Image 1 (cartoon, rainbow, N blue to C red):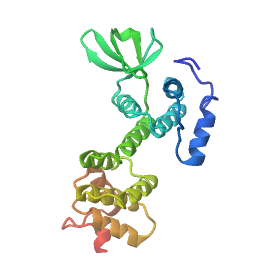
Image 2: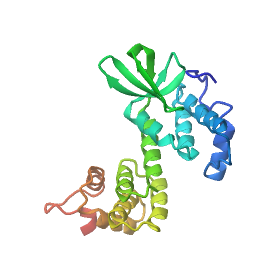
Image 3: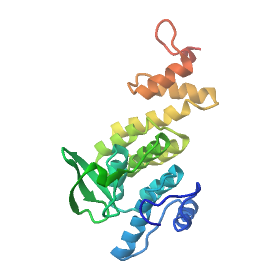
Length: 241
């Protein structure tokens, strides 16, 4: 597929479909010893997929970038989330941009080389919708969960308050078994409790509410109020009921 190509259906491009299937079956992508050219080509294919118009294909590519193990992936995902990932029309390459008065300053994603400046008409932003944006946020957070810096792990967990899901909860439960930092542990427990507010089991919901009382996270407060409401004294109804 050429950069900027279009897909005519809602499927991943044929050359990436087997890769995605392997990821689904194995749970991760394992890259054996490869030459730099082989790794670059594989990474280039995933970047290529980000330029298509179909958002499901882009989402699939985001998942594969997350699992690729390529050190360039986090920067690509963050730039995409920030609206700084573009297609450079002249060079047919994917670039990360910094806005300047005359247009943009470009950095080539594949080679990490400085491409100088370009005008606004020379590049096209890689488009993102809300669902894709959520997938990118989750991917970035998961990539940060194993960072040796506890502050970055904490930031990654806190990011998950926005998109807490049962899958998120399962991932964090595994992380909790090896986490040593108290702040990170508390944040993990809070995100897990946030997902448990959706449980059909009353005791599970009550336990989650007890864990989350006092949290200042906006998402937590909104869900607690929606789930239980407050009595005249400001206490959660379900807790006291």
